[in-house]
Length: 517
Image 1: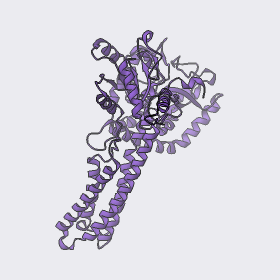
Image 2 (image 1 turned 135 degrees about the vertical axis):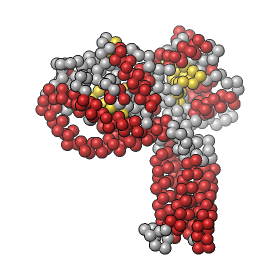
Image 3 (image 1 turned 45 degrees about the horizontal axis):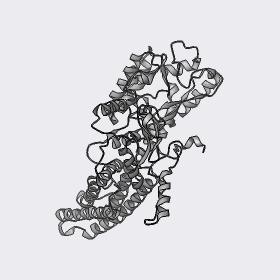
Image 4 (image 1 turned 90 degrees about the horizontal axis):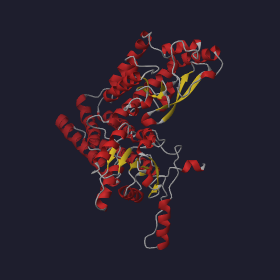
């Protein structure tokens, strides 16, 4: 790794030196101070960006799915044993107590938050809660059996089912907790923040984060660079606040903390307005008075529970549902369209010299840079990876087969691989090339809310696409309309809306002969 790769050290978290000084020894104290000033390098190939850490948090949904499968298997075996005709011939009265017990156990575990896996919840307490829930489900099964079957209720079988379910779920949740603890130690779930304001408050916050080691402070930004040191408590000052709008650090940030005096209302409003364009939450952290208040404030920032499974659908659950939809549909599409993909690739190669596929760096979720794949539609020697010159009607760079592919949007099909990799979604704002220009101006600079379209993964198709806003953006009005449609979709996104957009995409695209793509 070159020296250029070590420009962005971190505070706390998985990349920090984890060795502790022994209290009471002067040399150890000096060593601890020296270690505190040493930070690991900024290593994108090692760290997880915001999208990847969100995916790590969503693994809890797989936990619950495996719990359901395991508990369901034990329940079906128990029904097979208690029913006179076996599982196939089981009567409702015979099966109902155990089925009800299984549903009660799984429902209580969900409603009581046993899939949150908070860092401050004791593992013994968590497993005791699982045991209590299964015991309550077993008691309910026995009570219902007595009500339905009277003295003929097989209480011993209900007891065996309770013990088997208890053992299995306890073992699974012990494994879940070990996995979550490992991810926390590795930094997969450790929040990354940037601090705006090189103040004494920021210095105290960073020092506390170093001691806690459950929060990464990646950098400090301040508009008053002439009066700002090069680093704060060992964390570098990386530029003015506006630099966050396109900094390579941005895709790794979970939150931006404004460590400035809230009484400076004009400055707070200005920073909030400028940084509000980013798809990253802003927090104004008031300077706490005393260590207890500082710890409480940091605890709120550092808390990264696994998402809740019950109640109103939250963003984490919605993102997980969208990911399942993407994986299922893109896998099926790749299998079914494989012959077509091979045929198009061959036609592109035969039509003009050069590779069949074209790669372009574009912005993804939270301004992450991703490599998007397409079938090549232009001459290889005229490829424009930065979209500095957008396509126009009768563009001489477009090949013969390229015109057909662009008119039918078949050139976008290789992006199914991006969807399967989790970098894109089937439905979302279309990913724009990094540095794409509208006229002589970079498109992102034409609309203040442009970055809001990065609050969700980019898509192969989207609300804007079916509403006629697709292809090149030749005027500022085109950019504004595209961004407005993208933001409208993000605010309305749902499983069923995505299915509807996918269903109408093909007829809409084929029926539009006016758009230049």
